[in-house]
Length: 436
Image (cartoon, rainbow, N blue to C red; front, side):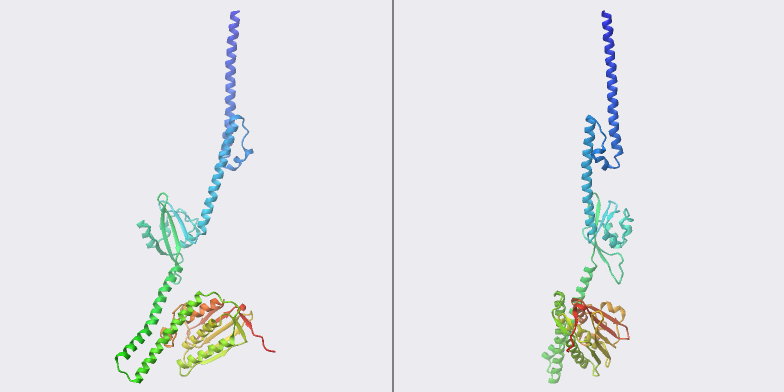
């Protein structure tokens, strides 16, 4: 009896152990299966997170495995949203740098290009894709820039020629390097060609004004000293006073032209409510041309004025008269005695009006034509001063022309004379009605 009970008890314990072992093995196999499914899911979605983030894409797992998968999905979704936001911010930042008028180049700790915007590519002649990881010194070989990098002192900027720099069309860049991060560098470039040209024009302007005023002042001061210290006869005194008056008038003309230019540059574009008859402008030009011609040459010039069809021009009459008169008087100054000067007005088929001054003078070489409208620029300095020119006439013409939306056309060849035309837009030209 006792032996049978003991056997049953032993058998029961052995069965329980086997059951526990089998259950544990089954549980372990099941956990391994779920773990494998979870791991396979993570591996399969590693290269593409978006399907993983969809609620229906994760495997159906019971219990703690389902909760773990859900938590992983939420963590990855949050990480992806943060990455997407960061990428959007980076794209906006790069877009802002691309839109910058300044060149931007990011250099690593060895001076290799990591990134550059299109402005920098234009400034230096880079290829924004091909030249990545190229050393900046291999691409920008200007000696001043090489010395700037070698000195590694970036407190000041360095000025170097830009891409496509030529003697006829200079391009000047201002380059400044800033350190950031771990031995990295930010290179900024700025096109200062216009600033350099403006500064050069300012220096030339001051020098020219000083030179133009110095000569008459010297003459006037010398005559004043002579009158004060020497007893002169009435004839000599009158001659000296006349020369002093002539030089004073030259300075007054120069000041008047400077004030005219200053007023033109600072005034708004004129409207179309004020109209001036071409006939009156021609009368003014003819009067001034004949008066100047009689003073400059005993024989005078052949002056032909053809006002064409009766028309009006919209704009400021005083400015228009100044521009047209400057063209005519310039022709008188530079055309030899008895030379032909023809002034015409033509109404074009498209409604525009063209005022032209053609002369039989010596003509102008092609290299001078682009600079004729610069202040104080003269092809023949001695001739201009002898005839009373200030060197500002064509600059005034250019500004008046631009303010009235017109176009200044210059055609000249050496030995064949010159032709200066102003073409007015149709909106500023109207034909006068003929009386019935």
